[in-house]
Image (tube, rainbow, N blue to C red; front, side, top):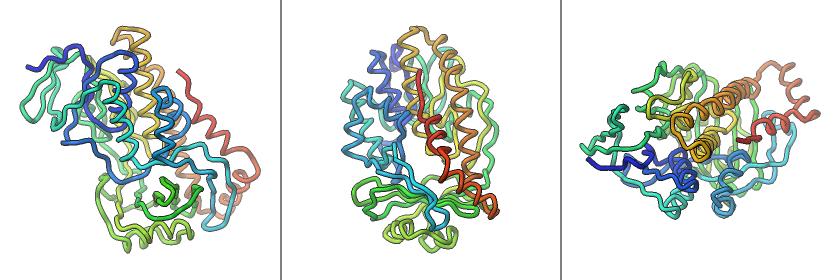
Length: 368
């Protein structure tokens, strides 16, 4: 039996697990991360980090790393098909998920953290706090932090989660050469396309379509450019440039799960997608995971008791997650409007009122 009885055991070395680990270490709380892969790695995709998460990463001195490795677009341009609606100043950092995970990993190691690789979670004895892995290794731990993603086995083992339900949306993604300084959001009937720069020469493309075809909920299922073009249809020139310069294309179905009634059980707490998988229409999945880790670490440092921390963590996080989940679902409806009169009304409100900035302010405002 391996003894880590003074450590919070984190399952998963992705954005949720690494950010939680960093925030715990900054509060002099000892974590240990268990990662099923043989190394830290992340799929080739872009991610946008908004001020609610940037400000928290700045507390562990990572804002400069984000600036060096990512890209801060100057504007976000909104299009109706290829016709401009409006543009706003951008407040987000766009970066590849791989680079973000690498930045978090380096910070975690710099702070004195340890990751144990090739450990795939099998079970947890929550009474005796014993973790068991597929390689027949067992560990005595202080607490279990589930950061094992949207298909969390820990969540399924200990929480009443319900089955995933197809949302009616599927998506394509790719990364291609496009030296844009701005981000673009193309709104169309039953689809929307997102484009944002992640370096000086590369941009990330995501296309979400409303369809009855239930694609697998897989982040790594590849498709062809011909299939993408057939599914997506019309693309603005900037979106098209990125797609046609890419050589790998991925598609996945977007599924929803019921909001959990509890974010914790005896000696177990949930974080990120394991706690609250969310549709991606506001780009807040990774940001919420970072908020989770910061909140839990700060509360535990302030309170000093794990059970009280769990209760307080849940009371703080659930209302915000519920609000952003609702706004994300509503955003898909607004993006995909097909009725000409409703489209005209939407475009008028976006161009002539501060409705976009007000919603962004609501999402980006985070205080604990």
